[in-house]
Each structure stands twice: as C-alpha cells, then as structure tokens.
Image (cartoon, rainbow, N blue to C red):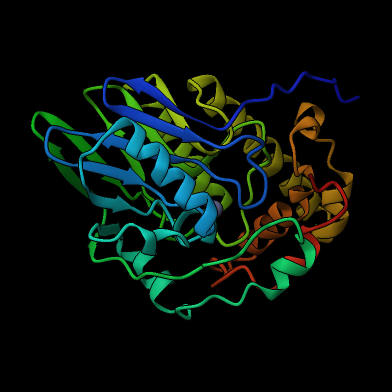
Length: 304
Ligand SMILES: [Zn+2]
C-alpha cells in the first residue's frame, strides 16, 4: 500500500547557496520547467544551463543581472534536452561548453526544433524562441575551469539520463549542479539514457565530498535526494528485472510494479518509459537517439 507522503512546494527564485554561487530554481519542476545555476567570480560569471524558451530565459537573465554585473563568459550545457539548452542563444558572447557526446547530440538536431508533438500534448507550455546552439568547447571526461582560486569541475561519466550528461562540481564549496542526473520530488525520466548508467552517476555523486545538490528539476537538496533517487532506480531495476525474466512486456511490468512512496512524485507515469528503457537495456540495445517515439506514451493523464 502506497504511503501518502507530503510533497513540499517550492517557489521560483535565485537562491544564493554559497557566496557567489546561486541556484535558479523553478517552482513545480514539471515538463520543461528546469533549474539553472550561476557561479560568479571576480572577473566573469559561469551559467549552468539556459531554460526552455525566450520568456523563461529572459527572466533568468534579469535575475542574473540583479545579483551580478559580471559578463557571462561560459554557459555550461549539462545535457542536450531542450529545457536546458533552447534558450542558449540569448547568452550572447558566452562560450558554450558541453561533453563531446552532448555536442554530437545537439549538432545532429535542426537549428529550429520541431516542437509540434510537444505543443499538442502540453498546450500550456510556451515554445516561443526555441533554438539549438551548437556548443563551442567540449571535453571527454573531465574539464576544470578556474575563477581565481575557485575550481569548477565538469565531469562526464558515461550515459545516465542521456548519452552526453555532465555534472558540475565545486570542490571548494561542496556543491554539485547535477543537471537531470537528479530530479527531486519529480519522477526521473530515462527515455534516451541508461538505468544502470544513471545508478552509476548517483553512486559517483554519493561518494563525492559535497553537501549541496542542485537538481535539474526540483528544490535544492542534500544527499537525502540522491538516496531517494537511487532507491527509485533500485526498485525499478529489481522489480523490472524480475518481470522481464518472467516474460512480461514492458507495459505489463510498468502497470504491475508498486511504486510505493514514489507514486506521490509528480509525473509518476514516467515509470512506463523507464521500464521500457530498462527492458531495452536488458535486451542489449543501446540508448535511443532522441525522444521521438516516446512522446505519446509519456503524456498520460497525471499532467500538471
Ligand atoms: Zn533532461
């Protein structure tokens, strides 16, 4: 029997989590409502992820200007999903950095993404001004940027949420901007990634000397969020694997799995896509190239 847990609410805000380091958190954290980060040094600022569209990204830029007048020199893309990169083109003059794999994913997309399928199922989302901007600088597994004494590490550890994920680690401050490797109070979505690879990322983050985590969706949190997320994926893997071995289809398995307290998280129906991904992985298939093919099944009734 699922326990009804109280899921907190959080507001949209630019939150200083350490001197000069900010998390820009968006309320709700649902479809296309993601978070961003800002790291301000003496001479320049670094932004972690833009947002979905022109209006959300312009609001983010206004909030940045309220806390610093330093130019944004680098814009980091944690991965290739539109809600983290479609507003990149508004950061004029900034060099965009991503993992090599993430750049490949973005480079094979059209400059102006076709959002008609999303617009149909998510009529409340504004897709004005969505655009792909191909990153300028790439790295394979690790890159460090320095703002005076502050080190900002970018780490790619294989396929997790997507093939090109990167997390941003500030060892001096003990802060991680996790991108979509971490969802909090929102169900993670593994459509084009790897369930086992994602667990590997969570274990890496759990082993890091950090106390503050900024998820891609959801409020700022500590390691308890990583533990929660790992429990979700362990449950998904163990229960999914059992049903795979029994010969169930992915759809049958997704319906049959009791999510327990994770059923209280928003977008819990993403379990369908996550189990589908797990079954493909268990059959030895690689990550999907893009989100098409998942769109219809993803947007079942529990939408915000
Ligand atoms: Zn994503």
